[in-house]
Length: 379
Ligand code: CAA
Image (cartoon, rainbow, N blue to C red; front, side, top):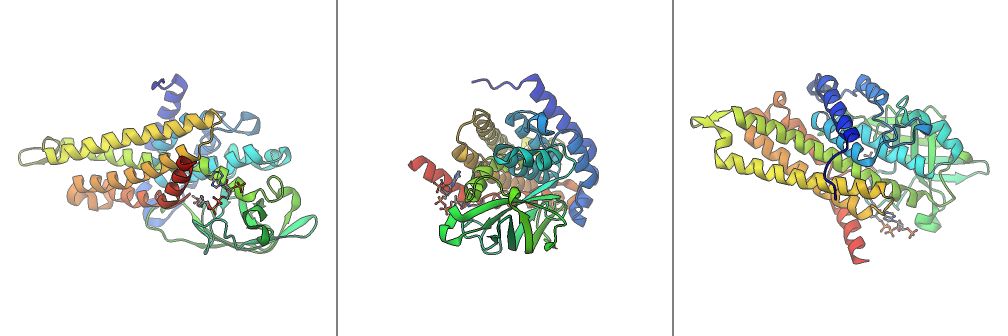
């Protein structure tokens, strides 16, 4: 087991760190306040290869490994968790799903602009009445011969208002339950496809979360991904990888809060000494550092297993379950260490605490991760 990063991985980590400090940090408080999407920054992330990191260069990607992805995600999320989720969804849910399962024509037409960052994508599975219980899809896609007629509503869709292409999961044959579900590539602007309301969220407020409304949208048959009835298995397979992205986002939120708390504790004085010299504070920081290191190892393990072509349902779920808990615990303690300063926007940690919560909810709640892990270990 080699715990050393390669030169290339260190370079990617440094490039993402520099980008986060120089391009994401300025304005991050205002974007959170105003719910402003980081349009210019995401464009630059595309130019840097951060939006299709693991995709084959043949399809516009950067051809990197998944450990590099974890490293870059951590650095971006440390500073701007909203930009990190845009990156995670585009990389792990949209590009990875298309690269693994789409037809050659679909890859050329859709994956190439998505992986090169010319456009961004969204993944539409959740519905008003189907979140964790993903098989209970109410959105329908009726087979009309050479096209499907798509009807229904999707909820809480990341990149919902800014994406150009959407992977939409829908029920084509309710009698077949999950075997009657399909995944489709839907283009923004198609007749009957309306972008619904933008959500006013607790955290990741710079990201763009919308409902989507499909009213008799004609989807050409060639836009179905994989064989008929493959949509649910497609979604599950994609989410296994997606969980590495969100685990790394959570890791970044935690390490961002930890670094700020450590810096503050080394300079802030109380009772005639820097507060890091008080054991009450030092022990909090020791716990944070230990848990963050453990979370990082779980992310690396899942990433290495993904690159080795192994089943990552268990390791991805473990990484997400643990890292998201660490993100919550660390950010709460980072606010506590900052005292009154932690409660105001200027010091960043209150934003990180709000951002952390969603990592325990999206791409499978912590309870769903425990279902996935327990089923895997019971096998
Ligand atoms: N990996 C691969 N396949 C899986 C799987 C996994 N982790 N979990 C289930 N499957 C497969 C099963 O093998 C089975 O396939 P076969 O019939 O071919 O054998 C099929 O899926 C159905 O499995 P189950 O009977 O176990 O299904 P279930 O109804 O009990 O549900 C579940 C399983 C794990 C709870 C699933 O519904 C689930 O993961 N729910 C959470 C959904 C989720 O993560 N939503 C997040 C929305 S996306 C998002 O948040 C994106 C964003 O914008 C940030």
